[in-house]
Image 1 (cartoon, rainbow, N blue to C red):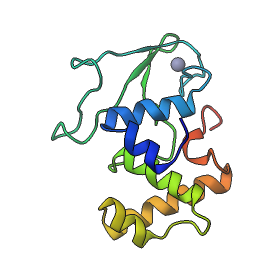
Image 2: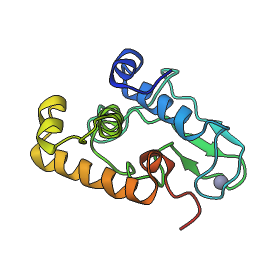
Image 3: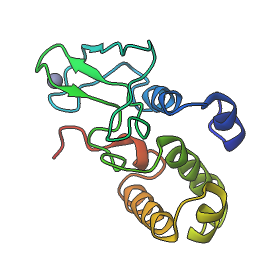
Length: 150
Ligand SMILES: [Zn+2]
């Protein structure tokens, strides 16, 4: 699938979908453990068969969690990336990232705020983080993370 807003809206319905898409982008050649770099990991099957709810309200996160076959640590596709620990839904991150890459003049915090219903502070923070990441690693910056290069 091509990575644009229409496609994301079509394929990403839940937060778990966003994780799955991110996995496809980041781990195109297979899952890699962000803790030790091992290539074998098991998907931890959540009870509903798709995703798991975490956080105090059990609504915010539907992280897809993996467990490394070597170091036995758990991780998700955003472990070690700029999205790690975010309170913003991953599907919104994906859309803003795509908008940033595709719009000729980028996207303003104001537009992010209006389109995705986030606060001005959140919009500014997201753009700031994405820009920083893209400076380091254009295009893939957002999703590439910095696996065991720390
Ligand atoms: Zn590992």
